[in-house]
Length: 302
Image (cartoon, rainbow, N blue to C red; front, side, top):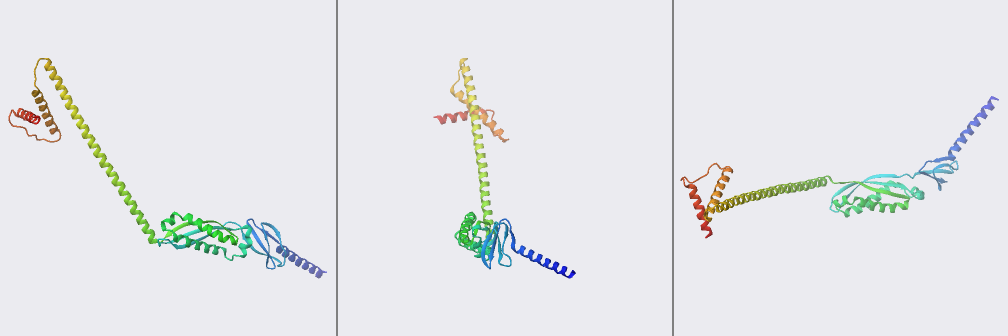
């Protein structure tokens, strides 16, 4: 009896193991954003979407692959040459995913998809970049990336892959070329700075000259107004003298004006920092100067 019980328990244990193994080989779960390719006797059978699924056990049906539908990214470095014979290194990031409608093509047609996408992008870049100079490459890198994306996307669509975006994240020229470009930019900036400084100095000089000219003009206006006031005062005094019956000739009036002008000149000469003034030594020096000035004026008007 105990022996029979042992055999019954052994059979139950073996049956349980068989059931568990059978269930584990029949039931499978597919995660979100993932599809499972099922093969039957080595031939494609179906594609299972996310969720709970059942397949035939004992190797009749098997899971050939679990294919990710999420967006993937491949980073690569491409070295090529520009139109002006400058070697550049470009960092390229390619974002791609498997097309849900062409999962079987993506799995069965390509063995190493990332490497093949990389080869297509390298070929496209080495065809586009040599048409541009280094400056044009920096200016049009987004346009080149878009052109490469369209070209590679067209090729990869036949294999069930969608190229979502291609980005040129960095363009690095040869070290010597980069140093030369920095030196050129530095020289250009120094030249611009020198021009700006020269323009500033020019503005200072012009402004100072204009200020000096305005000062001289105002000084001349002041002198003219001063002389006009003197003449008006003399004229008023002469008119009063005539009204009082005092006769005065034009020569006497001119003598008064010339003497006053001479004294003004002496005053200006002294106020400008000159400490020495040469005058006639005789007592009648002022009269001699007046006579000389009047004679010169009369001789000029003859």
